[in-house]
Image 1 (tube, rainbow, N blue to C red):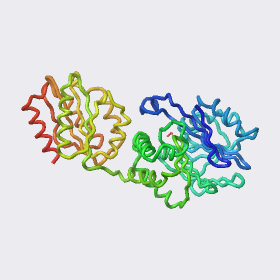
Image 2: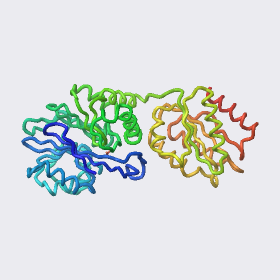
Image 3: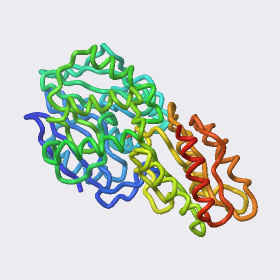
Image 4: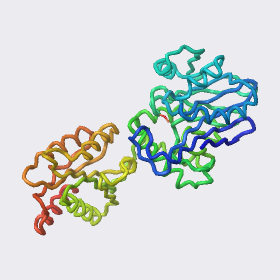
Length: 394
Ligand code: FEO
């Protein structure tokens, strides 16, 4: 569904609400409320389109954009980020408006050429450059690695609008336009999950962008991201949230127990460890990986101190969901966190050394040796596991 939202007299949001989407970023990011993507149209003496939509939404989006244009042409196309959720329809837009000038970062130019193989009228822009469209002036600021090297923001001072592309995005895809329609709690919850799954792997790059943003002294009344709702009331809170992420803020007494089990013995161990953590004063969440939404677990990990990760022995290898999970967290650079490995086995303990090794490769500080148990934990074995685990927690 395409939603047109007039956010200023001459500024429109064109939002695609794909409420049926089950995942984002291919199959990597399972979602709960669909996916939304926005581009923006600024009408002035020159008409400017900020970003595009996915290629498959071009026809529907431009049926609505044409109504706003009333026969006018698009003079400028700004591409804040070349990822296909924002640039997918770029080539089709340029076919429709071949005389449009394209403003993008140096990396954006590089990426677009390699995606579309055409040399349009590109203008590479950097911090300090501006675009005058008549009464309006737009300012550019590169925001590398939030999410790709090419990302940038555009500021429209006359209206105090910040077009932030991926930054401050969230996968809320209902009819709400502004954050006050969904409430601060939902805004920050969805913003955090988006950040964890999309931006977090490049978290170390975010402080530089936030520092530069403060230096600009840009006064912002609306943050207009390319995913989700527009932020009006929660601007300070969402910026504080990003500062907290960028500072790698961790709750010392938060733990996640994540496991995969075949016949329930690793699950029994997971419950035992969860109970022990609760007794030791931890805030704990437990996930049977194959029955959980991995994007929620990645979200929970960003302020978690201790990951307790367990696998059964599957033909002397890690259980496939655990192997996949380890690959995911390796990309996230979760520094400053501890991990404990555990699991049940039948006649061989072969995968547990690999579990420990791969946690270390994912930059976790692994405490002790894996806690293992042969088949079902007996009463005595359970006590032994609890005691060993408590020692590790010390
Ligand atoms: Fe929404 Fe990095 O693309």
